[in-house]
Image (tube, rainbow, N blue to C red):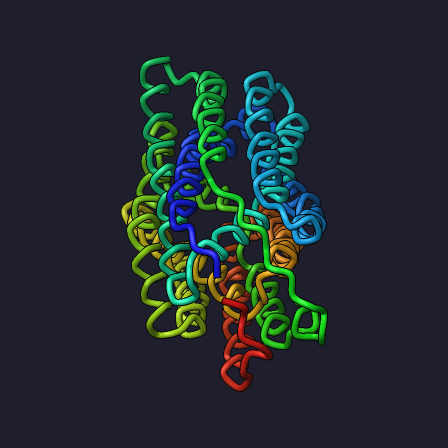
Length: 388
């Protein structure tokens, strides 16, 4: 196993500055869309199409990265495309432009994520993967804390000029690209194709996890709906970045904690807890009408992030060999992205027809189904240990 723990730091800094940029604008997009004439269903369509159509490229880019045994070029181009899309929000006058920006941003994510996660998994030993991914996700969330804070500062100093926030978000996005040059390329080892163990779609543990995460994601609609819920119960527009910052603070704190815990107690238990916990949180979002409770739920939702994101990626690295990991991460992200289209459409449509309570309870139901499917993982052993 090649070891370069500095890659974790450099890629963490890339994510920090990228999220500093993206989270300056992301919490403001739902309100911005409402102001230019979009309803809840249109917001669901935008988020669903952007995530789902772009997700089709994730497997392609992941397999391509494995084929050429290179990671950094995909990482750089992916982050670069997202950075280039930012200024167009400043000019947007119609929701179709916002859709185009979101789509371009997601294509960039599709390009970089499988290769980046594969590089992270190859940079540390298997016993430290949970900690490494947890640290990376924490850096991601630290940037996401700073993003809304910067947005809040700009809004206060510019008489709530949302478009100026969109324009200035380009600066940290460009800074993020600089740290990619410091990361060291670690080509995946060449392993002979001697059986189905090397093929993710024939790995039983991977397929079961994929089915569980896909069903779960049908209830994991765009976080834009959380912002809309907060607005529904009375949150002022200028406080949107602040409540989003609360979510990210708890995400940054919990990610390394649960990542390291998964190294000690195993990934499956943490994943199961994350599914059940999410179902509970979304149920409470649906049932509450009090703004104070919504603030608390945003903090609690940040803990879900720590339970899930890094642990999911570490688990895939545990069960998939090194030379196929970018492909596996691509398939994983494609499945999630494809499920996000119906998830966001279901959420937006039910909200428009029956209100937010039934929309959130429906999401909670799907996440609980994912939990039940994930329970079957305890009856199966991994088909092969991942190469260390």
